[in-house]
Length: 600
Image (cartoon, rainbow, N blue to C red; front, side):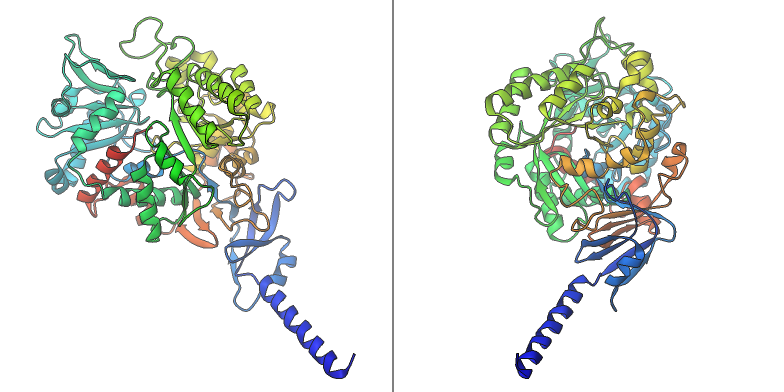
């Protein structure tokens, strides 16, 4: 080789080496605290290097310092723990904004309502604080009451809401989202009286004279909302979506789910995401009974500005704590005026369920299905078996949502058919005592959200919050999945307690698989997105009974901080305030939500 050629070769080699070195230089190196990866081959590392929003390397700090350059930021965890960003196994991001934008009727620890008198006073206080909005919109909304937590152990009635206002419509939404209570003005507006028949899939509860008592179940409730809220502007959806996405981020979620969308609600998400106001990824599942054309035109495994349509949502039954879930046997001791042998009811018939499941299988769409009671699971299992016999397995990863009351043979059937179970262990805390005493009794209550049965069978599962049924509080989910301790301190179903790492997987890598995103999310591995959560302490090192005391310090989406706990004002407003900075717009959000999407 001539001298000139040798010089040219050497120059080219040096340029190539410099290029490789630049490609290996990290934007950020995270270290200084325990890093739990959810990668079984490397469960814990000292440091993580990130470049261009993806993980460049993970391992010993001494090795990763080779990726440090002049511009590399060293992110010191200061002893705090880092885990993968949480992936929402089931929730309602858009409707979740309601928790920020209406009177908070939740019971402790998330609110102050303990009886009907305190519920009434909370509504009155909210009206006083939002008098301009109430005057302009003429609607009073409260969210989150739970009859199971009220001293009276019953729903409020129309007369008790009339005591708050007789002139304006008042609607309060049960924490499950499946039941509401209306005052007399609301019933007048929607035209419900003694002569009104119960709508299909719903019940108008009545007094001894046959008049509506104000309590509306399922489709009776859903149908009453639109005429009352119809005068409020549809543009509200957009800000509603932003409020929900911020709430999710404050609890460490880097991927959220909008688990029963409509076309307009997805378009609102897209509009806000295009403006850069949605910081997390959101997967939407429009209602398969209402939005098939929209699903067909928009379903995709790829995000556009952080939003995508993941497939179809189907709802078979209602709320177990509200006694509207379809069981395969009578409720244990239901509180209310129920006939002997009452076992709940389905919101849709078997023909409708089969048609919906068939359509999703024929078109190879993922279907996620709300089925709480054993009777609802029987319907879903039959429908999926028939669809798979006709269409085969299109690899669509069907999902059971909730599955509060299951039999072991049903778990076996779901395993055989490849159904992913997104369970609700947080119910053990919020409603475990209620389930033990009223819905299923002390024996069957042991097996609500039966995570132990799944682990024994080698199955993955997701652990979800179903917000706005509860706050999307990731640490409360983690605590309940591990301890299964009720409000009263009882341990409900010790067989179904799981270790902390298993519970963390149900918040990360397993729901990432559920959403077909396990190649990009759910664990800290080379090539995956740099989606992280920094926690106040290592959840594997603290007392399991104190997991709910851990805090999300910051949420990081693709190496960008999208939430920090230091911004307490913003977090406080998201969690507790009716958006007092713009209460008129807050009311408008409510209309858009109810007008264009069903509550689930």
